[in-house]
Image (cartoon, rainbow, N blue to C red):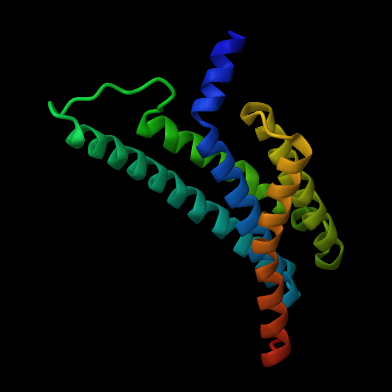
Length: 182
């Protein structure tokens, strides 16, 4: 049973990492920029929920379509047009399901503080929770990739937070440039 679970995780590793990392980063970057730019808890929560729902649906569809297209291209390149699924490959439906679930889960990590705290109090916990989740994701993935856990955690953290920080800078720039007040 343990070997089967490990095999299932390894075969879904791309979707798990991609879904969680992308959701953590895009949600944190978006809501942080919106929080800084608008200073409105309502707008942050609305934007976060819309982003998570739309992106989870989009990522699910994208995972399904890309996996299905990959399989079709592989079959087309095979001489007889029929290639059985290789060990470790997952079906388009499973790829889509894994991507969607992990995207949804990841998206709520940075949003949760805004659901329960005033906007100025939620900013730091949102970032800290996301930092912890990204580092933990990198460490966890190293267990399966046989990489150094600390290095993997730090790599995931720094690359991802560099991307997420763009939202903060855009929110600050727009707020300061246009002096928009909601």
